[in-house]
Image (cartoon, rainbow, N blue to C red; front, side, top):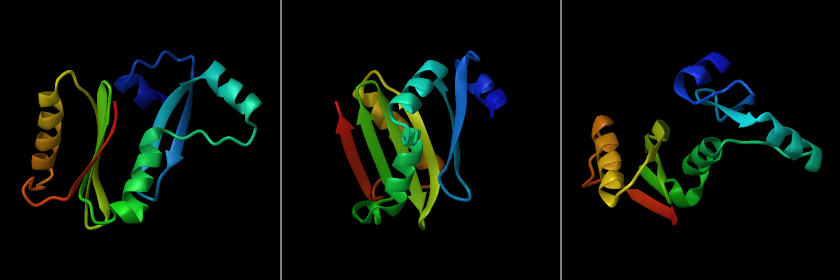
Length: 130
């Protein structure tokens, strides 16, 4: 996993690599600063460290309020999380940095198009933390 993270991120090697098994098909690999991980483990000895993607995917796939939704868009100050599912299977998850509202629209519509999800018929839920 370390080699994969080195290819795709700013992994410096001082981080600790973790993974979350969401289900039999989805594993989230991520890195956390070693001093932060150590602090968390010392301060909260029963804490479970999970990537937001793992929690978001679990909620999107299992939460009854989102069970009929096909697209879930979570908007933050400078990035979005986009989830797309079909027939109770996750098709797509990614995080995109955005600078304008048009960026959010572009990433959402382009991702939907790439996965043959029609904007005119898809059920979409948007959550925001701005």
